[in-house]
Length: 185
Image (cartoon, rainbow, N blue to C red; front, side, top):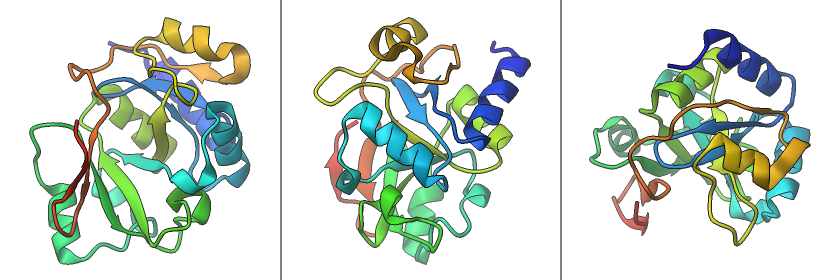
């Protein structure tokens, strides 16, 4: 079990514009406040990722997403449905989802995490958190706190230690309106 103090420290880092690495269902994620342009651009630079690629928003519940998403009824049912594997859904973006999150598209990628620590981090942060795998472009994602520290050193403000889930691949990505799979999980 994680330490509550470490969780609150990680949430404070996110709220103050910092970068946090944290365990998810399959790999360690890198996260920040999705509404903080400076933090998001710092994360993209660190990962060597194009801003046009877009990013995933991770939330504990759909109640954390008002303004970030503007889903149709079909999209909302898909997002709230139960899936066998961790699934990121592509839904219509809301007014808070800036181009640095959507990659300039009218949709946004969102996942309701069932990983206890990742969900708790979203709740403690007070809203959704950016979630992208903890790796530089072309490198395998980190699956431990040690691997994150090895890959990024002090470039990440805080590494929240904990176990990843039982999955071995990043989340599946599906279009919520159609169910079309864009990436296998």
